[in-house]
Image (cartoon, rainbow, N blue to C red):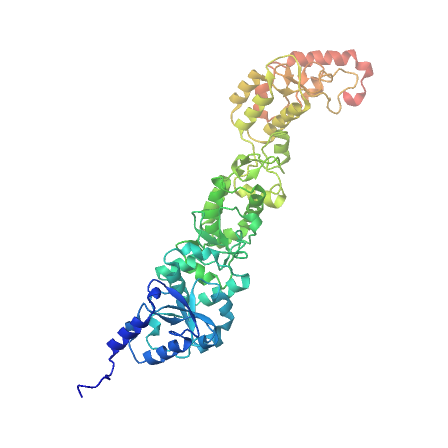
Length: 526
């Protein structure tokens, strides 16, 4: 009848009337607190609403305050929160089955900046279109909810207070992900769920975000190079290679590298040391010692890369030559092998040998492959002569024992190693008084005869000295009373570089001394 006062409400009219019932103060709120006994909107109203709307299109109530939050039944709580039905809301939706399967995650979820609704709050919260507005309890759903919560301000995730166990559990769940769209990537990048080797946060209980705020990519520690936090500088973020973390860290490839041990050493550690970015010096000793020890293994594992590593190590200033704190470090190619007795004698008091922990035999063998020198070049010998020599003089000049012994070492070294340029050696000998006078006569020299050098301990001279060679090693027996004898032998081809032009008159004079003392000379000396 046209006169009836009752008519059937269509969906549009019903929606309009329901929206008109909402308090005006709700219009500007994203979330409101409701009491379960509210005279207008008690808990029962939301239960009836969700039962009624199950057969309706949810889009009619998009952006409206109709989603009850929490896990407890809203009818049994004095107050509860209600949020908007929005695809941009950070709502994580839990079903009864979710809670049974992932109950252990609930304490973690409550620490995240997301909102939780569940069928426990209202059993009628089961609409088929609900997935368009809320996120399910899946790895992707958790990241999507967090992404909506952050609204592109992802740094707020750094303050999440997770224990190490909680971070581990969340990481295990998220490790099921196989791909990361950009919003999820950003969330995962900032979540404090990764175990960092050398950076920790008091809030995150030794777990840190994969976001490297140091301006460089973070790296996953290669398993072949066991590191500790004492080995690493502060401006490098290194993650432990934990099985549950690796899949996620590999997804963050734009910010986190998972290099081989050779890539890690060549591209990260050595450049940092080279550019002075590795501040803790003792830590550097520890990691570089480990690298040197691993060289034989890596030569076999990475044959193509090892030559680059050896070249890089040879030019890297990581070796101390003085244990004083702050002393400058040197490259292997600029230093010498301290186990070489000849070199040790040549460089007495010089800072040219590596200190501990690199001066042990096992390290030295490997450092030689990296350029550590086992021989002194002719130019180095000439430089030593110039550094210890006095102004040229045919008169003996006293020097300190260190210089004297180094001069002896130079002569002995020349005697044992080829010296290609005799002219250079002759020139420096004319320029400097550096030849060490031998104060001890050879075996078989008559004790009653004067040994000309006997009174000149630790003296240099240039000229008026005989430097024996292999061929002339016996001549001091018939010259020692007339001329100074050098305290070492040289090769035959260099003997003319040092020696006086004519030995004949000296030999004659010496035998005149022998004749004068003939009665005192025993037959074996003749």
